[in-house]
Length: 416
Image 1 (tube, rainbow, N blue to C red):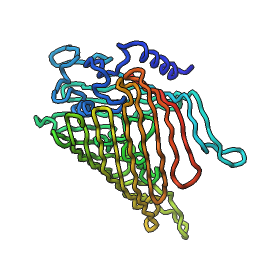
Image 2: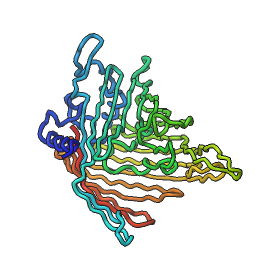
Image 3: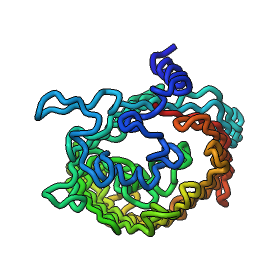
Image 4: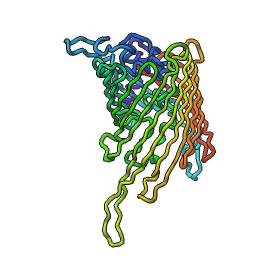
């Protein structure tokens, strides 16, 4: 048995068996339940959002050098390793998808798989010192190792408190949006509009709206609003493209206490340039011309709404429009403009007072000059513990094009 699979099995056993090891690092550090920060793990509640905004320090405080730190000297206070280190696991015991494979005669056939170990994620996060934070997520799959999130934050700068914060590393342009695309209420199901890439993913710098990319970001907030502005390097840290990407978010809270605590509206946008080096050509005289860099200038913008009610009902809606002025990354004079619009909506609800059963519905729609996508998702989840969820998910393909690719699968996810 491979070592990553052994780690997954051990992790599930520990998560089910031992209260001391069952909770994630901040739960251990502050000695609180997972539900302090999560409405339905991994989805953050209003307090969890505020905790993240403040650099993984208690909202309204600057406790990064104080709480649960080992005092080595006056100028060196360190975290205990369990207080900054955590593990997440994901399994898909079975998965079915219609028309997902090609038969010998060329017809489409259904696919059924069992026993898939999706990934193990090792993540380090928390306050390094007062107002200095980090979050690093390394994902190990059966075939690859990815570093998804890798960031360093500096908070409450220049005696301005929450008005001045800077983050650097692999950041998402949608991190502060009212519907972020990460830490989802239905974790295995992505919000499709957030995965729509510039140039259809064919360029050297193709990015989507919500994935983490190398960036530097400033953000600030007060009691009523949050604002953020960031500069992306492009898809990679070493990027030959000198035209960077730019993003911004403006968020307003509808309530920060009472039954609708954490409800918010926001608008976010991303604009940038995708590039691709075209193959050098030979002219009629036999002279080889130099390679040409094709450019695609793109933009995306859209509002989002999140209504929370008593930490039991969670409604999220995001709508985006966008355009690519050279979708095919063709030579000058042969550009193809592609416009798109898309919507993602999710409604989740605790179905039991004990918070052991959770149901959620999601709708995803994209309409562009090149893509038609429309799926409806229903899911039912059982939480044997705060840090483990077991669910069945069904996805209906309801667009009017091509073969229908319906899906049904089971997912088990835990963290400790």
